[in-house]
Structures are given as C-alpha cells and as structure tokens.
Length: 157
Image (cartoon, rainbow, N blue to C red):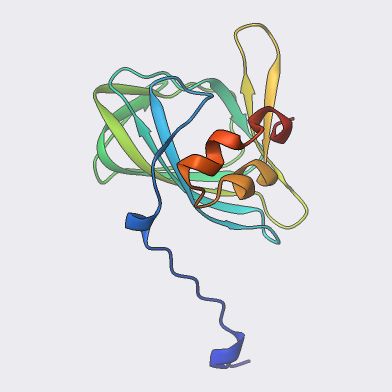
C-alpha cells in the first residue's frame, strides 16, 4: 500500500528552542524532553551528565537507545564515546557513569502500544521509582518556569 502525504506523521522539533533543565533523579545532570508519542509510548530526549555523574541503578521495560553526542560514559564492561550508540532491549539492572569529560546523549525509549512503563530506578533506600510515559509527556519541551511548578513526585510510580 502506498502512503499518501496526508497519512505521513512528521514532527519537527527545533532542539535549540528546548531549554535544558535540571533532572532531579540524577544530581549533576540536566535533560530536555524533545518529543513524546503517547500511542506508541515513545520518548526522545537529551541527557547531559556532568563529569563522573552516576545514573541511578535502573532497569528497562522498553527498548532504549543512547547516541553519544559528546563526552564519554560507561557501564559494566562497555565504554561509549562520541559517535557511539548503545542499544538496549529490556536488560538486567545496570548503572551508567559519565567519565571525566561528562557526556551528552540523545536517548530514545520505546515502550510500544499499551506499555507506558519505561524505566525503573532502584534507589539506595531499597525503594523503586517507576518512570512512565506520563512523566516524560508532562516535561515535553517544558519551560524552566513551568518545570519549577511541576509536581514531579506525582508523575512517578
């Protein structure tokens, strides 16, 4: 079947118009949620990690990719530098770290239709934090002023 131009869903995001904001679950990091497609539970975002920043220990309920735009990061026995792509299907729990240069990533999370559970952070106190599509949707291209008013805690779990 041939698609007509009317059937094509194309969205453009001018990343220069999307501000970086502090990401509260990873001290020393910032993020910007560029695009969220709720029907497919797909999220496209950037993460910026300061040097030697540790991500929370986490697992995936989705497929995730991380394209390294700049810097270096690693987990387990793998290291990633500018131009490298990490492709992760639902994986065992792991903990990424930024190296001495820090890192900036373009990340995609793909939960698929009907699966809004994307990531689960395993906190040091033994609790978990579930990150669903709704959290990312609430932060999609958000201004710093609106982000400051956001009840972040109500959007997780």
